[in-house]
Length: 400
Image (cartoon, rainbow, N blue to C red; front, top):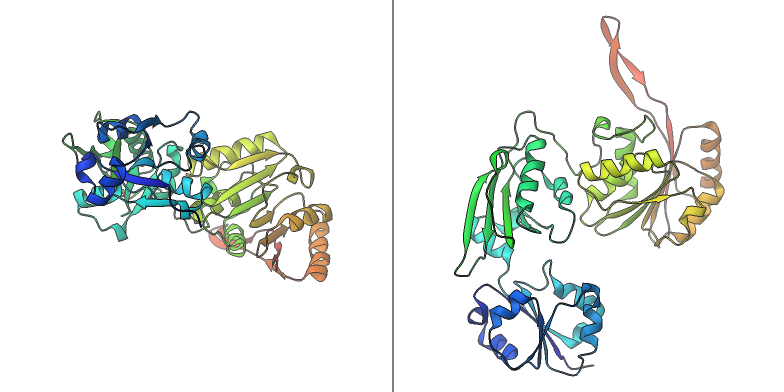
């Protein structure tokens, strides 16, 4: 096993003074120090070779590989394994070659400044990522700590909150925590107007108005929250479909015949870092799916133009597959072959031809075949009556 040669050091606004004696000795003994300009300034004078973050940043691993065998220190803000560079390095370089030196990070400092329990809040980052992804976490009573991507980010988040009926939410920007320039800015979303430093952490206490939009992460959002042309997996069927697809952290869904993207969007909302690829031949529907993904807080939905099975070639292997349109033997065969072990496949059908095909596939491959019927109460003259929706036949199975 290789000896550790790479030290990844978390550092705060108090610089070397805030490090433990052992970690400070590691930094002072380094032959090479790599980090951002702000990190280098925090360390001060040193005889070590200085390297700033490479451009593009993806070149970082190659830069480090070329330094193997020297005493190398990478500087990161706070805890290098919490929304930071340490995890990325650890995926590419054998962890046995790395020693991590954690520091109190922005989340811990922000929670301490706010008096919030870390166990009772959500920690998010929009640093270098789409800001819209925080929308999925706007819930009544939720407390959010967010690493931002610049001075304008709190204002954008305030606008998201106000537009969804959470304008009374309390917001606090904390900047340069732990250093001599520490600053705090308090306000509410609907009237937020502070000019804040670019490097900051945002604390949000979500407060809902009586007419606020309630968008739980449990599948089954109302149909009218989606832009669609009438062809979509409806609310109740969608909830049952996602229960069989089983969204999991970081898992990838293929949504074949994605339409307005309702299944893919709810899959991504249901589990942290869940990903989805929507395969849809019609451009207008792909546009609606992109609109829905942005509005509901999952801007990273990937959309592919084309029809299955041809459009499936070359895609990353999925953990789950939903066939909501374009069902055929060839489509199933391609999706089933690509599906990872323990992957879930769900296919919904409404036409006689498609339901007959599902019955045939179920006899050949097993799984569960059910008919789902939903009726909604609607006015019937002066009274109310049940209006049945078109039945859906659903086939689901797990690849073992």
